[in-house]
Image 1 (tube, rainbow over the protein chains, first blue to last red):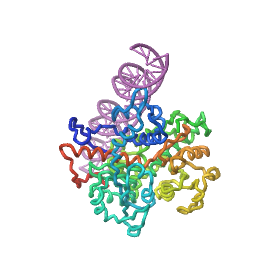
Image 2 (image 1 turned 60 degrees about the vertical axis):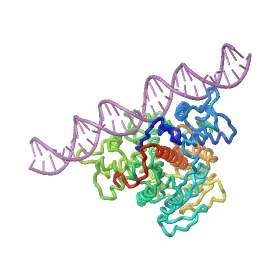
Image 3 (image 1 turned 180 degrees about the vertical axis):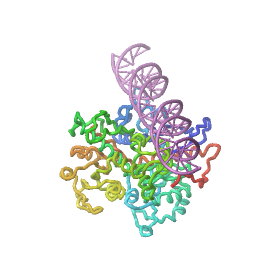
Image 4 (image 1 turned 90 degrees about the vertical axis):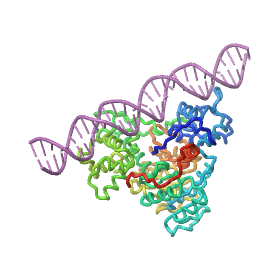
Length: 246
Length: 246
DNA sequence: AGGCGCTTGTGAAGGCGTGCACAAATCGCG
DNA sequence: CGCGATTTGTGCACGCCTTCACAAGCGCCT
């Protein structure tokens, strides 16, 4: 889902201290660790063991240690990890200290929900603008923010540097919106439209397709159903709750 | 994100013809192929080459061929794949011919959007019930469907076999809802709440965390920003559109 | 100060997934 | 009927990720 070069170029420490070359899989887990850490911090924990944090994040403890080792040694042997320190470190790595501006394009069912989603603001993202191509929706106020016409995108982008564009339009409009976003300098796109986007190589696209998630679950339902028809019946006895911690 | 056993038990073909043991990565791509195929079918295509379908789905053609080979030989050398046949085959594998019933728990911003999401119905899923714990929301009609209280879950489950439960509640309520769903026999859960769910091993959980997606993009923004500060300036010249086909 | 228990950080092994490159197979045409 | 163009299906090698197992390091207790 991305073919960008990392280019270590060691020794060249300008403003940023030689950005670490983290595995993609690790990056995808850092937000989960961060959430667990925030939870622990609110509970008053000073330190956590890899075992404890791993359980809270729902991963293997060895994996967690390896992940954290990639971003430096912020743990103390025999004690664990300093919660506050680790929070700062991960937030820095993820660039969450920048309070990035996000715009949502497409104010349908989903765009409406995204505009009001509290989880964004609490994680360092500011939804700064809502756009739609439908003049009937322009002017509508959602979550204290007026919907603007997509033609205003360029003007808004000049005024406020947009870090991430969220596409929540029908799939037929998605590519055109992506092109517009790219044209005004957006280099990160979160796409909710069920279609493939074509963008320049320097632009990162992540896709979330709700129907696909259901289809994957449907497959597993199908598989499970076909297995219960076999000997050694799996039965449907619910109740053997798995202890993974809360 | 799952630790289920597939258990091949070869030779034991009962009603279902010995369910294929597909790699998880392949399964995750099948819905994407299916969408592309539907698109092609509507355009009147009888057959597709692996190259063509791969481009439409945004993947490598070799990967696509390998994926399709896992579910049997439905292509013809020198010609390509029969679109209609492949659609049927993938829909069968994914179990989409069952028109599975879905319920949404938590009618906040997101649950509201999910209840009205057209992408579900068009893909063989029926949203049959909406639940919430807030009595103030019970009775509200969304998309022609009345919100019911979560206490009614059991009654609804007895009447209509629920295949998949969607959790769109605040994270504090998610585990309790998951327990309820499991208790009424739901074995597939799509979780939008930012928290780790603990469920029995026979239950499949998939998680979608919108904030995590933004954080991953934020990381890449951070990384790109730190690279532009290095020699060989990457510049921001937009316009070298990558040709991957529409 | 010394030893002991606990926890991190990491080397190594194994598994999974990807992508190349090519043999096998099919169609159409002369 | 045979040949060439085309496209599938797959053996193989490579790289990433995961997992185990253990040495190294730190704090605490005696």
